[in-house]
Amino acid sequence: MLHIYLADTIPVDKLPKEFVRDAEAYFIKADIKGTPEQRALIHDIDCGSYLDNQYFLDRFGAKVSLRDISTGCKVGLLVSCTSDKVINGQECGNNARDSIIRNIRSGNIYIKYNDISIDYPGCDDYEIDVCLNDRIRFTSLDRLNFYLDNELVGSGDIDYTDYPGYEVIGHV
Amino acid sequence: MYKFESPIGTTIINLPNGIYQFDFNSGTGKTFIKHRLQELRRLGEPVRGLDCYDINDGLLDNIIKSGEFWGLAVLLLDRFDMYPDNFSETYKDSLIKLSKSCIILIDCKSNERLGSATIVRVKLTDGGGIEVYEHGICV
Image (cartoon, rainbow over all chains, first blue to last red):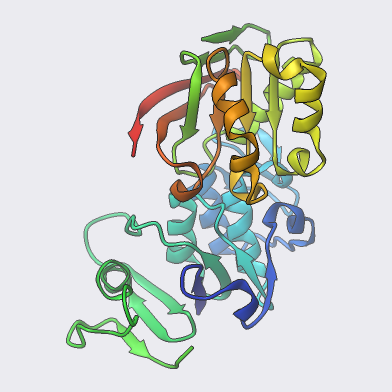
């Protein structure tokens, strides 16, 4: 599952894995293989398409080095291929954050929630696999949005226990 | 407004002087603009595109000390979220003063770091053209 750590609730020195603060700098270590989730990130965030482990096609069809892809997309790509580190996602734009949460099924990211709900295509709920702060697992994006908007403030406990799409799995 | 025409694409910063913040999305072309400004600067244009590495290396201090700062027409501060915590405190007065005669564009995803600013968007065209234009006010 994708582990999300929220900046306002967990300080960097309490993260369970090594923290990568500068995704741009660390991207030189990224091992991009063109997995379906990596292709989805490039499509969603940069409106591009994966070509190989060095290049992608940008929105105009030009062949561009992956080193020149957006910082938000680099964060997503790093999260998708670096399971032993927590990647700093505070430079992600909203579209990058949303794509990471929708698409990535394994990895770790540190973000700051900005009170803007996580978006998804269509109007039905969206299936995710997200663990927040190593404490609550969400399988529904609607449920995660509801939690972030209504229950996170305060103790961070689940108040609306009848609203499905979550599982309490631990304590920080 | 700042405009520079070239075969690799026209660069238009379609804004009056002031401080602006890019909208909160990734992949819109902000770093591309920074690279374009760096290219134009090498041609002698009064523009600068700086990122967090430049700031940490003291480049902004050098630009201010040399006097180049006060003649800039466009200044882009890329990846502002990664700037030192004391950046705003240190440079706030200088940037506000500069904004009377310069278009200052800031890539910052956190409202808490920047406060309120006019939001701008980027339009890229197939031929390498760039336009930055006003989108709205963010409070």
